[in-house]
Structures are given as structure tokens and as C-alpha cells.
Image (cartoon, rainbow, N blue to C red; front, side, top):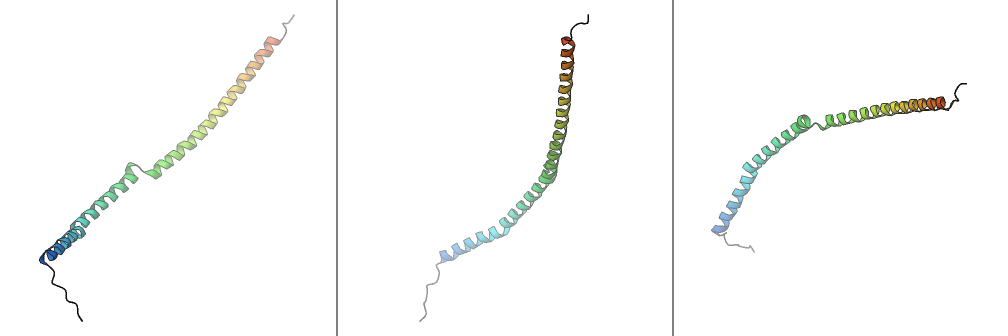
Amino acid sequence: MALISPPPAEAQVSLVAAIQSVLNLINGLIKTALNSINSVRTVISNFYQQVTWPVALINQAKTKVTQMIGQYSSLCRRFQHQSEERHAAQLHRARERHAEPPNQ
């Protein structure tokens, strides 16, 4: 026994054809345009990361600056400590001079 279905109505055929046309447009022109836009966006992003804002070079510069700050901070602390020691020694000598009884 075979089932027989009625022939599709004319409106159904035109709706299917319209949907197929839209899908063909999306898969054709729009897909190509979107792929082109994505390619341009990728090129711009790579240019930005390599030339305008090179993250690797910026991180190298940050590391170098941090090292330099550490070196100069260490030097400054050493000089300050030596200066404080020198000042303390001078103060101690001055107190000793004033503490000595006058010569008779």
C-alpha cells in the first residue's frame, strides 16, 4: 500500500524558494563579507599588538625599570645609612669635646 500525498501548494513552493534564496545570500555574499571583515580585524589587531602596543616589549621595559629601581633603592639606602653613621660619629665627637673639662 502506498501513501499518496497531495501536491504542494503553490505558496509552499514560493516560500521554500524564498527561504532558499535567503540562505544562499547568507552563505554567499554575506559570508564572504564577514570573512573579509574578520581578516581585516585580525590584521589590525596584530598590527596594534606588534607596533602600537607591543606587550612583550612593554613587559621587558617594566622588568628593566623594576630592576633599576631596586638597584638605585639599594644604593640610596646604603648612602643614607653611611650618612647617618657619619652624622652619629660627628655628634659623638662633638659631645666628647664638650664633655672634656677645660685645661687648667
